[in-house]
Length: 188
Image 1 (tube, rainbow, N blue to C red):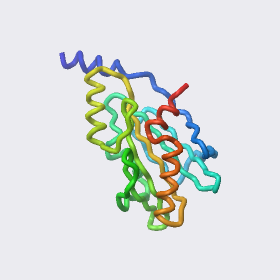
Image 2 (cartoon, one colour):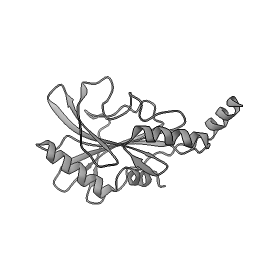
Image 3 (cartoon, rainbow, N blue to C red):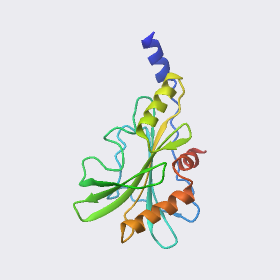
Image 4 (cartoon, rainbow, N blue to C red):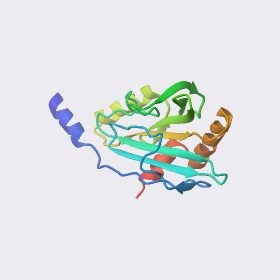
């Protein structure tokens, strides 16, 4: 019986939806280089999108979306804002919006980056990893095939931590937050 259920759960996986860069009012999509100095790995993700937006003052925000299907877990240690096998390191946690968690990253003590990470499951965004895991378990038990999403907005712009935080707040507000970004990115 357990084997049958496991097989049904695997067969319930939805077709992959390739995310498209969502439109964000007041922000322009800029050409994103094939390789940037900061790029999350997303090793277990089935689909990934990394794009860069610029505001009218020329400041930029990176958006990273990754879809996780089946048993893949966006909260696993190899996923998230700190790219594995790079000089990037997490320095400290920082305040963010209620649906995202913030952290400061540093590259060899010379480059700083602020990143906010959120998760989306069933159209609801959260910064709570336990809630996401429980939601994913519920989805699999119910044989629903909705992917779970990792959403990261990040910037290295800003002379101070407060300026970077303000920039991320503006992008978050204009985009509608993680759930709205996923919805816009997956509409065909």
